[in-house]
Image (cartoon, rainbow, N blue to C red):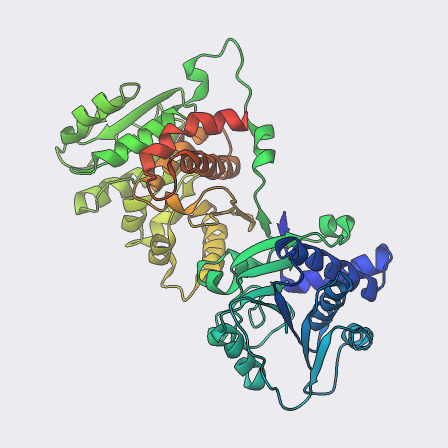
Length: 504
């Protein structure tokens, strides 16, 4: 599913109106029907719930008024407040007002001056239709006070398309105290980019996309760098295994991980790599971790560093199709020297994670020395060390997209909606996974999965997307059986086989 900037959504509305053809009124009616149907499915009892509709002067307000009219037609008794403080409504909003005031059973208030707020209880449902995705500046004055009134109530809040006051993409300059805190957001046709950022979750709540029939041809023709992943499409990218295949056909991978006390990172990444189809895996470890890795992952070979406690020397890289480095690596000066030496001389694509990223963060120029087809997998804190402290997720994503293009590498920016960013400027958001995976070691597992795919010859874009997707599927399968609270990283490894089978 594509994610469009709000300016492009307006263009798609216009394209649909012109090419379907359909007028703007009918398109608004289509949107209102989708929203009303969803609301009625959630609150089927017409008598137990009072709906209080807050409508603004624009088309989002028109949507809200149309929803109130449709609810009334089904026996609900909504209370409606239309805020027309300037005396100017959008044409479709005005038309919906004129229809609504003629309907018996609808308590309608048009607020032109003084607003006498209703008494709201926890049994009420507020339908927020004050402002939509076209908003380009923070709410202020009376509308800011109205938002604070809504947020202070105990009522359930349902926002139409986007919570009022929230910008569709960049909220850096917004006043977040003036944004509606929705429990549910019923967004029209596409999610908004802002929905995917952690700091906006208290405002967006649980969100659902409602199809309002915008032109599929227009959607195909309109460019956007953003897309949400489709796990179903991944199966068509899986490489088919020939009956006469042998282990050499599935690549040799080198994993460099684990200082003293961090052998677990080596084990998790190695087991994940082997569970993701690599032909041969060698784990480069300090001597102190050799026995642990050999006994925990008997299918892997080990390469021993001359240092007993940490990574200090570049192994021979020639035999390997891909190299993974970083999990539990440590950040000693000797390790940094060995890492930089390897970056200078490696030609195989690399997966760079964790401590390796933190070491590179001290000397950013080494990012440009990564071999072609390499992937870095930072979490937000690691990303900030590479690009500078970011004020919010939008700024971090923007800087990551610029870094990927500048350095010619893929970036897996980890989070609830992990973003896979390509050097071409595209950004793909993953939809698999769950909060139970927010636990130590899950990043090491992801490194192992992606390393296996690179070694098998998948291109960097496919390896990153498929790796993130399958990692999330394994986490979802594990959470289904074990719950999110009890989930640990080794559970994700243990469910990889089911995840791959599900994808097959």
